[in-house]
Image (cartoon, rainbow, N blue to C red):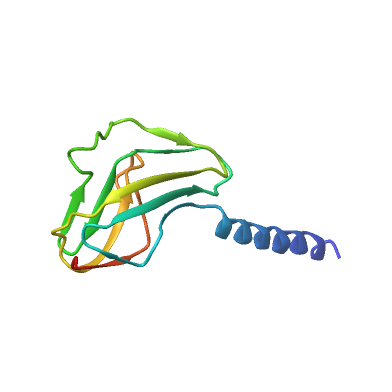
Length: 127
């Protein structure tokens, strides 16, 4: 009996940790899975981590053999911002009209080497 109670407690705690780990994340979401070159993409950063997170406000488009930084005509400050737990922040990114067809993601600088990336989306030529 002495061994059973600590073992049961350990199993229950392990189960709780794995459940919470799936829900607690910082996520970058794009509104659609398909866009035409020249379209505006709505990108939302969701903080479901339960604590403050920092992020850089600069978006980068990453695709086949290319990484396109934030457009030059839009100011991109080299400053980290804070997003509170449960909060969302929306960004808009205009895809270049001459963008090649392919699969892309949008990355958000978090002041870390890898940043955070959205899910993949397809870009087709403008009509």
